Image 1 (cartoon, rainbow, N blue to C red):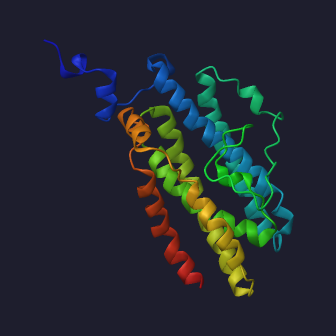
Image 2: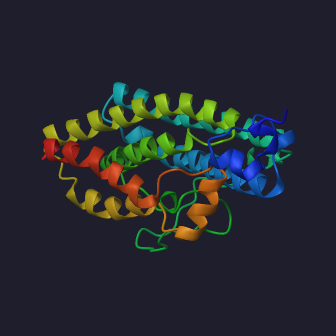
Image 3: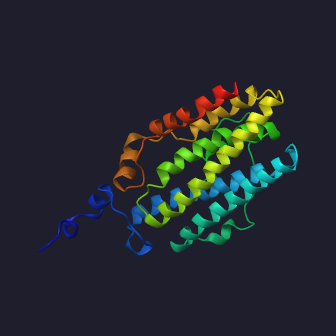
Length: 249
């Protein structure tokens, strides 16, 4: 007797919530899209860590600098974990080692929307520079909660090894978001005006959820690589960040 699974196409299997477990059973189109997702994650973590590392010495005291160094180290570890999965697909992981200027940024007044620059796959928001410690903490508060929302989506991906890694990463990023909240709360207590930083980073972080077409989203959904739309993810981020900002005044 032939089971329903035996007669299902791979597309139907994935659309129904099926999971792939190794590079050997991944079709070419799926592989390309999966590697794009992983590259964006790795590049964003490497670029984010490099940018925040430059602000560590501006932290008020040892505890703040220690927490910041921890965030940088853990973002690098997150990148390494996903990069190892890319290596399973034959990606040239060596190109990520000491060969790319992850710290580079565009001018502060640049406006690239959601587009990538030519050199890597980092999220567009990570091409903008942070001006000082307070600006960096505000950016990490907003982006930290955005990352938590995005990881909630990504950890449901149909490639099981990546989903498992990202579920662990999500726990780490929740801690980073909490540390950023504490940092902004301290700035508020000290009377530091961060409104300009909020005004600068809010639209840029919002754009990190993307402006992709419904057709492309549907293609990725059928492969189990997407579940919630960009608008849904952005709304979830606003639900998280709005009460935090209100509490901080």
